[in-house]
Image (cartoon, rainbow, N blue to C red; front, top):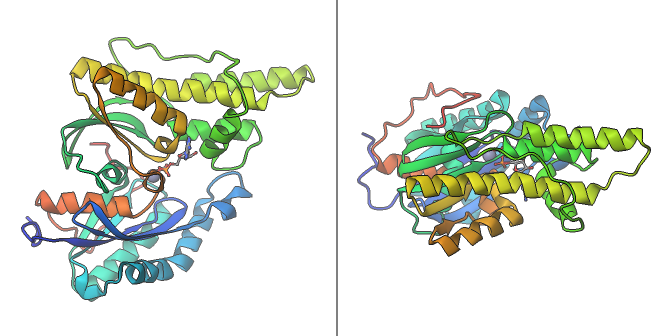
Length: 340
Ligand code: KG4
Ligand code: ZN
């Protein structure tokens, strides 16, 4: 049991540095964002076609102090207003995570506030609580650059994985296919943009909705690579917009179909989506269609889909309310964390 769980109002200062965004937010009672500052390194990594871990760590080190100061200024708070310091401890790039974890530890120690290590995965899911009244139980599709899964959120801190990806994560597939098409990193938004100019001209492999439900992106990815090779050998131009539209249709279709099937089988009609890919417009329209079948659909605001610290502050609040122990100052960064 922590010392805060019965306190009426809880204000959390949260830090996130698991990949290429240095972020800090101040969040009140898990649902109200007082400030949300994100310093992105996308432009820096773009020239390498993806995130370079060592460069990410160095840039987090350069940015973190100012990002935290700015978040406090924008929220209009001082250290006396902060009840707890929260930080993403995993999953992510170890060196990148360590910058946030060590900064958070130092703040918690210097301010005499409790520290809470938060799972990045639970953070993405908690993005759905911001500005909404969503409560468990519900199903959540998590689709990011590192994870693809449908989880049953039984309580704020109790998740059960129902289906996961057998190979690539959805966002990873968007990024890899974008690379084949010569589009810059990160590929998801670029494919979405290009797909608007194309049509679904290629039928890509689909997963079977059999007894065991799962996601798989290797078949779609290989299809695109083989198609690009074949056309190159023939000296034919690459119909990039049509490939983008066809890939997006297959990638998003799979996410929606598997989630809808799980909803049907489990009889759970409250559904949320989370992670970078949940920013995708086609994905949102597919989930909107599920409303016709009586489903209640929740999305995070676009700014809380990709990595940010507000979602970590939201997850920390519900962790604190659940009575979880505070993290020791020996809290370590973890490259992977269990989904549940
Ligand atoms: O959640 P996130 O910011 O980081 C991880 O935890 O991985 O997700 C990043 C992923 C990238 O692969 C990016 O291409 C994808 O989310 N993404 C999108 C869109 N915006 C970001 N994928 C499809 N459509 C989008 N609009
Ligand atoms: Zn993420």
